[in-house]
Length: 75
Image (cartoon, rainbow, N blue to C red):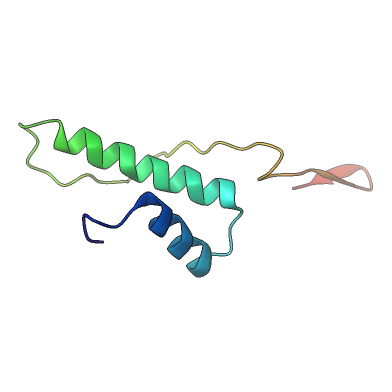
């Protein structure tokens, strides 16, 4: 995406493309922004930011719910 693309535009594009709750789209957008900012602030880092490995995700009542189903719960 071009540098002039705003976070708001990124959010709306992602909401159109992916069928995810808005809070998860915001989390992914914010994580990508943090990774890019970290890369830009580290002059000795010649590698483009990468996103392999474990990525933490914030869940709250807007993004996940539990429903009782017999003797167990479903997400």
